[in-house]
Length: 365
Image (cartoon, rainbow, N blue to C red):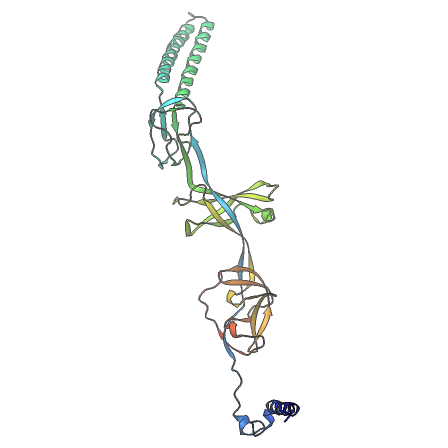
């Protein structure tokens, strides 16, 4: 048999095999037709079990986040107005002190001697003036003499006041209540104006400074509440309120400085700390929310699979903000629409599904 005949036989066999496979449902000896074999044909694929949850309408806060810096409510470097030798340091590092507490006493021995001399001169001027008044009452002294002695008395009193003022410069007291920092001098040290003796910070209230884009100026004002967090206290939220908005916008960054305050009675916050600030500027009362597990991100955009007549329907959506496991739906769904949250891996558009309602253990707030 030549090769042409062999090739022809192979083609005929292939054609018969393809015909038998293509028309197998109509050939009774293969299992087609309306006979017994039709009754034994395999069943259709059952609906896929999925978990669904409904789109809900809830109040959704509109928030702004910013980076803030903690500052002391009051802060000062303790120094001296005069040059002198320290004779007493009446404080400890880290001590809480009240306003007016004596911190440093400088050597004032010479000034006290001068004050004693001035007081003696004043007392003598007072006696001379009193005696002159009595003599003037009996017309035994001239009025001009009385006036001269009065002027001398007033000058003596001024000298005493000046000496007392100089003495007060040698006593350094706390200008306000707060916490002292490190001690930078020792007893016997010679200090001059500008030398740092210690620091004093009022941290019972902490100021928080942060910048916001100018587009939020209309949304932020005094009294607005905010929350702040620091990496050192991950589970602690510090609550505060806005006090002041800067009167100027930075011309380079187009940002406005905002200053708020946070109660700090427990002393957790320190001046200079980094804070993550979140402000709630408004609330959307009827925001549509869906579980974030229902949203699938694709190249063409986010989608969900809604359930319509027990079939999965691929539905493009436009999403907004995210909050605690929920996503805001801006377009594509309505309140109450059921969407698939579990079983998405085996679901296709138009495929039959058997939905079960999810049991929620938490809600968006």
